[in-house]
Picture (cartoon, rainbow, N blue to C red):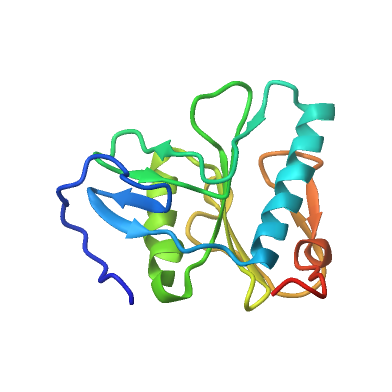
Length: 177
């Protein structure tokens, strides 16, 4: 069942469970990722961690689903799959989330708007079912996303030399669904 998209302020001020996000005080249940999606998160997290370990020691990748309070937006707490902070900053500059097919407007519109206004430079939305990655590079392209749906290299724009392979991101193990 899908929540209706409501922009008014809700009554909640904190997340009462680990699978809940708040957007302006309204609770949204974050769906459980499939095993394949968890593999994608592990791959992205491991590759980003490896990159910062060798190139950017002050940068940090948060653990998946760590809470992220949005500055200047009351009662908004999100739980992205990947959140990378650069040069010791307090707020991430690269965020990766998975789309919820029942609430895709939240991922593609609402969260994109929240992250843009919070100062995130790059926001990725991964749709594992469609094997599609949508990348918003707010500093360069504003609201025109790059959509990747075929084998190619995908650049993380906040770094000069960090690329991911589309084929590696969407590699599916035989036993994972």
